[in-house]
Image 1 (tube, rainbow, N blue to C red):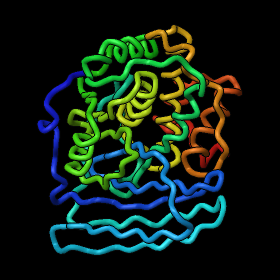
Image 2: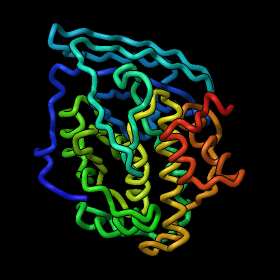
Image 3: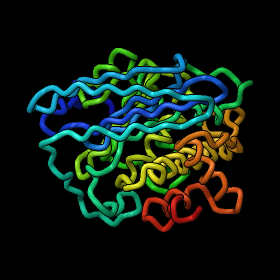
Length: 311
């Protein structure tokens, strides 16, 4: 893990354009919004926001041929889930995958990476993994403050050194916004982290400044995205990230890493209201039937497990 000035990792989205999607759904009467995009494997952590019953979403997309205005109107009633198909830009090149068969960098998924839809990390899962009444932890301002605990957790969980081709950055809101937009994302104030899975090139995890316990969960989730190639199925990809996040949290609790054992509720089970809840519930179900969360992660990564095939 390393830290460097943020502008060194920015990459304007140029000709490889975006896949855009808008996902909105109700949970307990509130509207949760995920507005997201992918470019070279961008993943985001987006917190829930409250809005009205009818929302008009408008997005301008520069695809280097012209600017296209895309408008979506979503009418949602309580607990209904509605997905808007993604806009697919032009002039994109196929991502080149590195062939590596070691424990952490797994073979590329079946199909083309660019055929996949965007992923949004529903942060309500992470909120559920945090105990409501828990000790207050330090507020993390810089990646150097957590490098030791991240390495310690990773090595304790996997028995391996932290990969040297993954960079973790801790940024303030304005820096996060700048990095997210520079990498082709659509910014939302609720974003707490996102990851750029750019294998065979170095991958990067961007995490917003936060208290140590919440920040560590975000790091664990984003690691679950970048430790292996992205899966073709959206729900399997989210389950993969959640499986690693859960294994990460369990490792912290079982070893009281950083004195954080009392901060996490690793038995949390969400209501199945959307893609992210379904993905996490699948992981918890496998764990409750006796399979280790880390094993669920690896089996999803190599496609030995699949939500669509196992449900």
